[in-house]
Image (cartoon, rainbow, N blue to C red; front, side, top):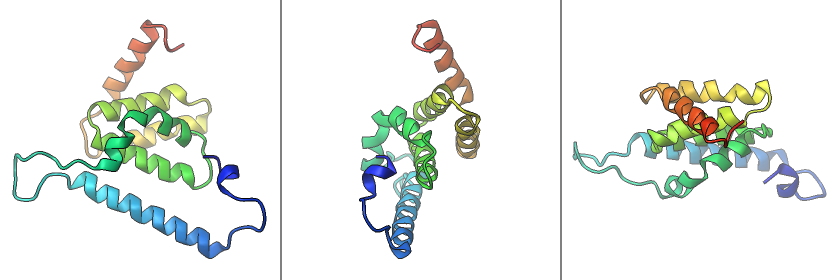
Length: 148
């Protein structure tokens, strides 16, 4: 939601409340990071990866998360970008390519477009390069007439 909907009219929030909320979101993202990068069951070399219910629920909403991230609202877009990176790694390989594709296809300004290479750098640190799949998805969308 836009900040104007979340922030109630009246006196501004105390800085301690903002700092507490910022800390809480950072801790939640850190916990998600640990879950994403430590998904294999301990002691089972070939065991199935443990699902992360929150990220499982976000999987079908990659496009919406990209749209919200591209709004570049205050600190919120930094958290959303980090969440998008975690979701892309969690949903790899298709989720990583989808996230890059949507950031590239939906960006309208240089500032928005700059988020795609930042995400690409994060993804390349832990995954095979998802850029070719993102470009292939873009070309397929162009040929299908769904992307100008």
